[in-house]
Each structure stands twice: as structure tokens, then as C-alpha cells.
Amino acid sequence: MVNYKDLGLVNTREMFAKAVDGGYAIPAFNFNNMEQLQAIIKACAETKSPVILQVSSGARKYANQTLLRYMAEGAVEYAKELGWEHPQICLHLDHGDTFELCKSCVDFGFSSVMIDGSSLPYEENIALTKKVVDYAHQYDVTVEAELGVLAGVEDDVVAEESHYTKPEEVIDFATRTGCDSLAISIGTSHGAYKFKPEQCTRDPKTGKLVPPPLAFDVLEEVEKRLPGFPIVLHGSSSVPQEYVDIINSHGGNLPDAVGIPEDQLRKAAKSAVCKINIDSDSRLAFTAAVRKVLAEKPGEFDPRKYCGPARDEMTKLYKHKIIEVLGSDGKAL
Ligand SMILES: [Zn+2]
Image (cartoon, rainbow, N blue to C red; front, side, top):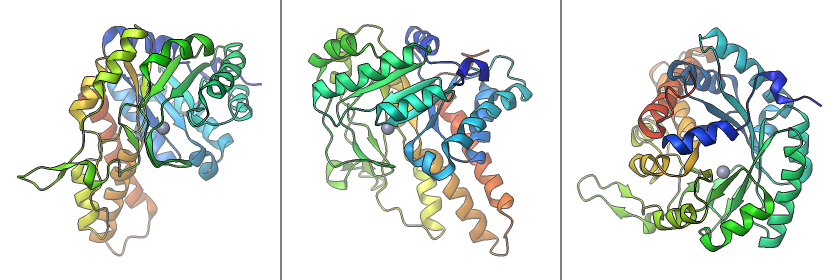
């Protein structure tokens, strides 16, 4: 048994309380390799932004859960080296699907876990979530739950159709489970293809796809019923067109990739939404930078020469999200 407090990590309780009061959102960035983690920590240290480092099931398979946990521990020390005196870093399990997995993360030093019972019938989701909450809270580990189904593909999370969260269920769910935050479905979606072209309109000037707006009415109904309760948005990458263009003009093929416009996320961050998950955008930044270097310098074979620029591009992206979209800069001095 390792307690996260001994690793210098924090849970989400205070982060979220401050974010709800302050009208901003905490970035939740997924990581599965060293360059990505370096970029996240550098961006957060330079902007003094609290951060949630997320480990998904795909990341655990790719990089090994033990190694990722030690990397997060190292990240705290790295942050201090960069001059961030009091780093506020949370290590979070993304989309935990069983009690056993959540327990193993709690026992192993994670400071927060998500139990995703959203695909289960309502009562089973409550029972599973409550079991995880009862265990995690003994160690002051915070728990994120999910109500409603997001469309899209993220690692093993695959859903064809989305079902918006039913606001009439949230009070009962939050009360009976005791969860610390709630992921809801209001039209965000996992992956780089969040919407099919037929769900979008086309900008007559640029010919680019314009996605349907998020269901802010559902969010408002949830907020009304659970005032001040921390709400989470998954699948909130914007799929920046400049990265898609670089990828496509350097041998890639991502036709009609489309994400959530940043002005909508900005609006959400000012509300009770206090955790916004961003993963695909950093994958796009990484891939665009690597493709560019390899296309321009075909003789290059030192991974540091293309992973380095990829890391710089991700750092730029994370800082942009923190300062321009989430408003979390300067909140962890
Ligand atoms: Zn997710």
C-alpha cells in the first residue's frame, strides 16, 4: 500500500472547489510516454496551473501501470526542479471499469480514480460506483463517476451512439454514490472524429465542417440540481485544423477530422465544469511535428530529433489550452 500523499500528489477535492468558485477548469491530460509527460509538466510549471495526469487502460497496456506511476512520482520532482515550488499534480485513473482495477490504483498511489459504469443499467452503475467510493474515500482518494454515454472511440471505450445525461437522475445518483465529481454527456465525444460529416454543417467560406453545438441546456439543468458540484467533460479535444493540415500535407490522411470548438469549451470552463479532458489534440500535435521533420529530413534517424520537436509542439499546445481555453494559469502558485 502506497499513499499518494507520500508521493507529493494531491487529490481533486480542493482543486475542484477552487475551480468551481473561480470559474475555470482544471486540465486533464492523458499521458503514456516520457515526451508527453515532460511537455505537460513544463507547460504547467511555466503557467503555474494545477493538472490532472490521466492514465487510461490503453496507456496501461502500452506503457505499464507501474512505470507510469513512477513517472508521475518523478514528475512531481521534475516540476520542482523547473521552479514550481508547490506543484498541484493529481494522478488519475481514466475510465476504470472494475472495482478491482480502481482498488489496485488506490493501493498503488493514485490520488483519484474514475469508475465508468455508464454502460451499465442505472442501478448497477450506482452500486459499482458506491463500492469504489466507499473504498477510495478510506484513503482520501477522490472518485469521478459517469452518467450518460459519450459517442466515439478512446482506447477501449467504444460507443456508437451518445445518450445525453438525464438531469432528473443526477441528484439521486450523486447522493447515493457519494462520488466527488460527475462526467456528463452533453455532446462531446472521444477521438479525432467526433462527428460524422452529416451531423455537421459546412462553413461556406472555408468548406470546413462545423460541428453541432454542445447541449448547454442539459448542463444548465444539471447545475441547477447540483449547485457547485464538480462536472467533468470527456472527449474535449478541438482537433486543431493546423495540425490536421500539416499531417495531411506531409503524407497523412485524416479527412474530415472534427472536434469541439474552443469557444464552446471556454464557455463550459466558466460554468460548473471544472475538469476538461484533452487527449487527441496532443496526439495530433505530436504526429504533425514528427511527420514534418521526417518529410523535410528523410535522412534523420535519431528519435530525439523528431520526438524533441514533437515535445515542443505539445508544450505549446498545453500552454495554449491552459491560458486561452481553461483559464487555469496562475491557480497553483
Ligand atoms: Zn473519456
